[in-house]
Structure formats: structure tokens, C-alpha cells
Image (tube, rainbow, N blue to C red):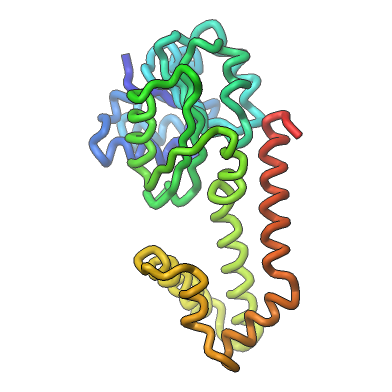
Length: 269
């Protein structure tokens, strides 16, 4: 019997395996994984000692905890494959955006403990944040297991499931927003004369520094912004354009769109 089984061996599964093994939570040979891409399983076996499975069913039958690390669009096919084979004492954890616990229960039964998690891509460098929500059959011990797994790749928070689509819109998709903003800063720097390589270094270091400052300071984000915004200065000039162009409204609309899409992925409006 393996401790944890992975259905899907993509980037997030690989990040979780790395965190689990390197933190000493489990040894590689205590993990089992299946992916239709054989090269992904070969990578996990070579780098971490994970046992490759021959099918999703083998993962379900061999693991105490089953991680559904698949895209929302693949969920129905996988659940149809494994339904009737999931033991009631198996903990099932899903990281698919928009897929509700109730939806999964419709396939594998309401007696199985199911936990829904929304991680994000900084988990790849063990600096992610994962929101965790438990279903009705989930115990404190199940939540402890989930928290251990995802703490191996960053921070964790506990939320009610009705907030998971909102979490997806903020932190699940959030890295993409920051990357896009940084792209724009680099392009702007190049336009006003800085070479791209230098500008990229400036932008990345500024973003990292600002994030660390916000994390370590006891000041609010508003106070930190005001600290760098001198009256009549350069920051004020830039922020004035943000305000004139409706920057906050753009952000809010974008988040609402992501929130709506998360619901659509789960078959809800």
C-alpha cells in the first residue's frame, strides 16, 4: 500500500512530489503515479523514486490518499474510470479549478472523504499558497494530511468551499496577473531606452523586494504605497495615469471574469 497516489503527473504534481520527498514527509517509493504521458512518470521515477503505475485504477487501488492532479476538462473521464473502485477510507484530494466536492461525490459516492485544494504555480519553487476545503466526510486527521502535503510547497489557508472559485480567481490565477504586469513594465522600460536584459532584472528585483517588504512590514499596502508616493513626484505621476485609465476597475473586472470562468469549469453559472 502506498501513502499517496497521483493521477496526473504534470507540473503541479511534480512540485508536490518534490516537496513531499525533499521535506522528508514520505520517501519516493511510498508514492505512486500514473499519467498518459509516460515521460512524466519516468521523470518522477528517475528524480524522486516514485513508483509508476500502469493505470489510474492501480493508483486508486494502491494509495491511501489519491491526488487528482488533472485539468477540469479531464475530470469527468477520469471519474468515470475510477468510480466503483475508490475505497470509502481513501482520502481523495482534487486540485482542479472549478470542480466541486459535490460533483466528485456524484461519481465516487458521498461516503468517501474528499478535499478540494487550490494551489498556485509558485509551488514549483516551494513558495506557493494553497487554499484547502474539506467535504462532509472529512475529519481533522484528513485535513492535517492535506495541510502537510501542501505545506511542503508553501503556505496553506483553510476556507469554506463556497469561496474556492474566488480563491481561484485571486491566488490560483494570480501569478499570471503579476507576470503580465511585469511583462508590461519591461516593455515600457525598453520603450524609454533601457535594454531588455537590464530592465528585466530591475523589474524582477523590484517585484521581489516589494513583495518581501509588504510581507515583513506591519504597514498596510496603502501605507506602503504612500511611502513611495511623494507629492508631485514620479510615482504620483504614474499612479495618476493608473487612476485616470480606471486601473482598479480593470482589475476588479478581470477578477470577476476569472471567478465566473471557475464556476463555468465546474458546470455552474
